Length: 217
Length: 217
DNA sequence: GCTGGTGTGTACCGTACGGTACGGTACTAG
DNA sequence: CTAGTACCGTACCGTACGGTACACACCAGC
Image (cartoon, rainbow over all chains, first blue to last red; front, top):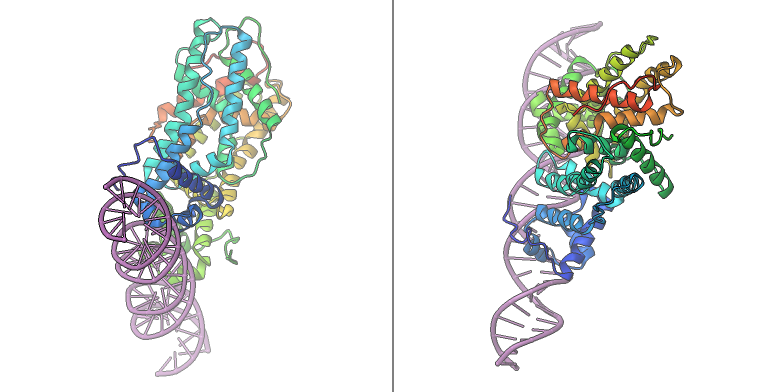
């Protein structure tokens, strides 16, 4: 609905990044009810500057989402190790990382605002999807394919295998968090759930030499 | 934030139900940007009547969610059949039913508005959660426990087993739909995905006589 | 000093929307 | 016929918010 010519630019200035940080904090605190006035006040800048930099309110939100997405680069983690233990370890690490991300306050806030506006302004949702679920797929697939190449995994469709992994990891966690349930996910729970998900995934897609592990509680 | 004394009342009049139907339609069309004026206009009633019946805007939304939740009662489906084929069939049916529900326009719209308001007004989210994910758990758990009692399933924690089933069925479908992706789920795809999820669940939690089915693509 | 550019703070405008008030209409009861 | 009730349609009020305009401060470069 606007030019927002600077939105594609990945490099924001120091001051601008500070503003985006403020937006993120406000988003976490108040959801999508943040106002331009509130942003300007807390960031100690003028509304006129906000509009000059980001075009309009949508541009500001999009810039915030993109900037946040750009800085949560997790470790690349794709390597040619072909040990079953190493594969299992990688999967568990990915699972734990993903659970940590989706249970973070910033992820919850960003997903909420993107979903809330998905009907009217799908741009935000597309960006969140791209830097969330699809980015995770792109990062995990090489691991799965390496596992298959090493004879540790057996499947036809990498995408389908990834989606199963996704389901085993996320289960009902994200939807419950987004809907406002306060299920406290501490480090130990995440670690345990991640291990369970990795184990289950190997049960489903691993080559059946001897069964790796049975379902944890 | 309001009394809304009539909200708990499960029985709405014919006219009131027509109004709720209008709200639902507007929610599907416009997301949470529906206005009381728009509701009144399309429902051919006065705003004053809306406020008289439902208290305020939140009351109207809550009434809509509750009314919609109350009428999507799926078949009970809990019976003492203990055949493996019957159990598998039940699981598949549940999975297909669930996928159909979460991919429906009404479910997407309702979840979106509940999530969008979850930060400010958690009531809606709690209701959606209660009549969605938790209702599904209550309906499926007897089936799982019957399967375990019949020696067809093996697990310790029914809740954990259900959450795995939930993950295998839903995977990334719901979050992608909520974020605005238009992944067309036709009847055949749902049926196939449901069968795959049921098969995978049995692989994970079934008694290992002979392996039931391998992962479909 | 002067000038231009960048940014702050604030006043302001237009509008959209939640909520209320009020007049008018149809129907029922007595 | 009158009174009461329930509702429709609409005008209205207050406010919140997106977006703009303007006055002032600071800081170059010259």
